[in-house]
Structure formats: structure tokens, C-alpha cells
Image (cartoon, rainbow, N blue to C red; front, side):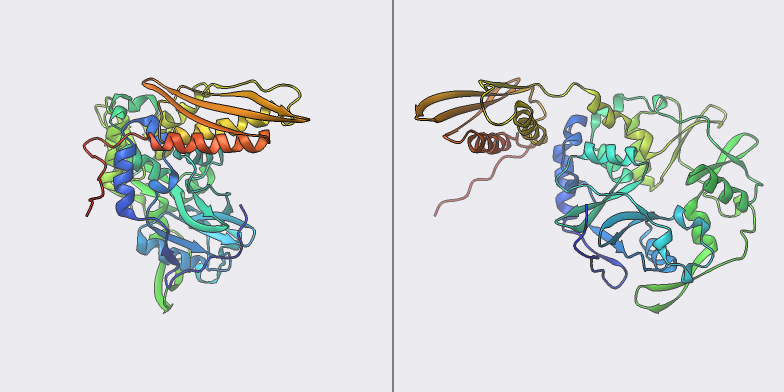
Length: 415
């Protein structure tokens, strides 16, 4: 999605997004009782409040300084006709960060809409093999959604306690001995496109080295020149052994762990990776947010919601495929509020004719296990009446959204 111009940034390259963190916590808690409900929750409801947006003309040192201060892994990059991201791992091959612009480092990723479904965001991240993607609205970057954000939201889904984490692990896992050199770890990350390497001693997991560890150790923000601008310096080589910079407390779980346990542990401990280990501490597999999103992504494999349109004759001037797509869009939006919808149908009837003109009466129904949601529209212009019906049905579905458990709608007091 193109931009109308590079977004303005605050003093440190960041600015407030349009979302309220308090609202996010409440909405995610209410809407994510089931995995299906989370899948059709709007993206805006799970993203963090702060946002960092950079220009391709910014230096790697400046970006690094902001990411390090915020404990972040990625940030958005925007120019007039494209948007994308830059990550800490992208900095691994930078020689002179204070003199290197990120124009040759960042990657265009496209974007998602804030009112898109969480499932759509998860699919976009996996399809494009990226950790995060910008959220754009009216040509402006208004947020970022990442695999981590989605997995954090999954912690609100109790049913994930019934999913075995061992079914999702990636194996075999590249590891390094505790005496291996840092330069080797960096080279392995660049060659394999990975950000985490487990460290072992006598075959047992004892630590983990990340791209963050290497970049923030050997590319250091040394001083401030202006507010938000940092000058970086990099040693000519990457001396030392991995044991000197590794995290000696890697997150690990046993083979009976659930997806919910892993997701919540990663969130609570601020870890970007989890290792599944055996009885002797040997590594059996690795779990990153990408693997943990698999149960969510599996929902798309379910057969698409049935849509039926009756009474549309061959003589009518707009194609059945166009009509069905309009109804499917209503169904997809509606399932964010009523995931229990099982079928949507539209019945078109003619009520009267005047010369060459025909008046149409349309009825739409969305079926649920406990009843149906109805909408009606009519008119002499079939296309306009069909659009009116879709809009009316969409609003009717939204009005039937169930109240969150333990919460009743407040009535306005009369005076």
C-alpha cells in the first residue's frame, strides 16, 4: 500500500499509534476466549501502543539506538511508495553503522489494514517470511504487528492447553559448543537466516546467543549528537567466545508442554525462542512464534463458509461471482463478532414491474446454532439494493455480538 509521504517521527524516531493499550488488554481478553474468535479479531486490538517509523535516509546507528533503548527487534521503514521493516539481524553485516544509511538494508514487506483479521496478519507474516509487518491506514503507517504480538494474544486462548507443543517443533536444530567463537555464530546466522543459536556443553543446553546479543555487544551506541541520533562504532572483528555474550538462562520445556504453556512462558520471560529438551537436557527441537502460530493458521484450512444466492437470473446485469464476493465479505467481517455463523444466504424476488423497470425485494439471512439474523432491502436498482442489503446485514450481525462473560450492557440513566 502506497504512502502519501514519509510519516513524521518524534524526537527518538517514535510516535504514538492510534491505539490505546488499556483498550487492547480488555478487548483481547474479551474476544479471545476461543482460537476462532482470536483469528477473526481485528488486528488493531492486539498491537502495542508505541510505533517507530524510520526513513531509508536514517543511519543504521540511529535505528540501532532506538531499538536498543526500547528493547525492540524490529521497526517500520516508510518512503513515498512503499513500506517495510528493518530488524536487528539486518544489522549483523553492517561495518560502519554511523555512516551507513538503511536504504540498502531494510526490506519492503507491504502492509496490512488495522481492521483486517489477526488470521490475515499471521498468513501474511508466514507467506512473506517476515517477523513483523507495518499496519497502514489512509496511506500512513499507524502500527506494527508481529509474530510476537500474535503469540502474546494466544495466551488468552485456554483451549491451546490441549495442543501439544511437541507437534509443532522444528528439528534438527543448529547449535554451537560453548567454546565456539562469536564470529562463527554471526556467520551461521547470516548464512542460515536465523536469529537464535542454542549453546551446548557436553550435549546439554546451557545458553542461547541471539542476533541482539551480537549486535548490541559489537555495534554499540557510543554517544548522542542530537536528540534521538546516535553514533555507533563497531570493532574490526568479533572477538571472544559465545559463552561470554550468551544468555545463560534459555527458555526450555519438556516434551509434555502445551502450546499455551510455551506461549505464556515466552511472553512472561520476554524470550523470543523456546527449546524443547529431553530428560538429560539434550535439545529435541525449537519453537519460535512462527511455529506457535500453526494452530491459528490451521483455521484457514477449514472449508469456507457456505454462501447461497437465490433468485438471481441470467438476465440480471451483474455477475453472480460479484454478488457472492460481496456477501462473503460481509460473512468474513461478521465472523469477527459472531464466529458461530454457519451459513449466509440471500433471496432475490421481483415485486412489480413498470415498463422495462423491475422492483426487487431482497432478504438476507445469517444462520447460527441458536437462530438466524435477518436483513431486508429493496429498490428498482438491483446493484444498489444488493449493496444496501449487505450493509444492513453487516450491521445486524454486529448488533448481535454476545456480551463478554460477566459484563452487562450499562443503561443510560434517565433524569
